[in-house]
Image 1 (cartoon, rainbow, N blue to C red):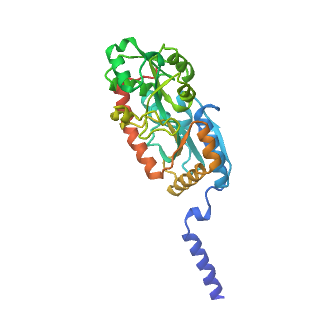
Image 2 (cartoon, one colour):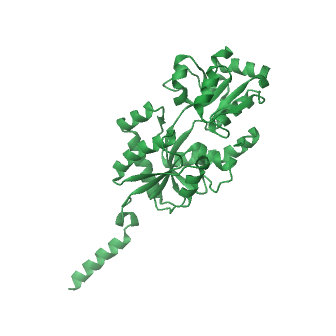
Image 3 (cartoon, rainbow, N blue to C red):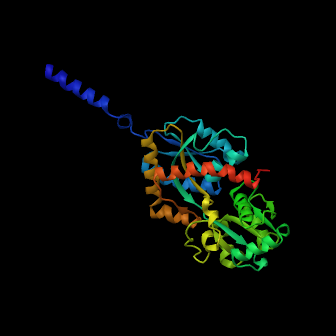
Length: 326
């Protein structure tokens, strides 16, 4: 009898010593993924593709919750206020995390309120010029803009967007801050006006620009990455084009998964590991590449270090460029 009681007590003590994750393995029920944009946009498309494969790997459904509004702020604030138990996660774009808090009166901070689990995909940013300018490289564009900046304009997908900030930074760094900004409601109409010569250049994601670069309707001046893009090996990096200081900032729009601050480190690591494994699957990788994305393969520490660094850089940059969302 005494031996039996001792054995039972030993099992009870051993079970109590197990970590909570072992007793209630994560995830034990469906996960909600907040996407702070309407369905059908680039961030939503990437989120759904990744969630589908990640769900299979985790063995639980991932339910997409689109909460659009205020440039992504509505859904992001909702995610920040969610329980930090790993069952509400956020799939968000870098522009929302770093630019929106500076330009809008919103109640979230990318470092204070979130832990990044994984940077998943990016859309390389390209500086593309109008063929009507007669320039073929950054040197030619710089000389043209500096000679008469007020004569020229650049377009963007909207005031306060990454395309606006990147194009404004380029103008300032080449010594032509007087170049006029023309905001549009999205990229497509701005591209049309660059092709037609009504705008001098645009800075935008490679995806929407791709076919026009291939056809010669747009001139690829530089890519805002440290390495050339495999899709366009003839377009130089900004450093190769003669403006290495441009790469002090992470211009390439990227998106990934965040959890509310305080989420268990083991859960963050699990989501990082399984998302990277999902991205490595040929089917998902090809699907994302076909959509114009490039996948990112980073551990949690590397992704978090970049978020911490960028969160400190964007506010001073936006202030120096006098960027507003109006």
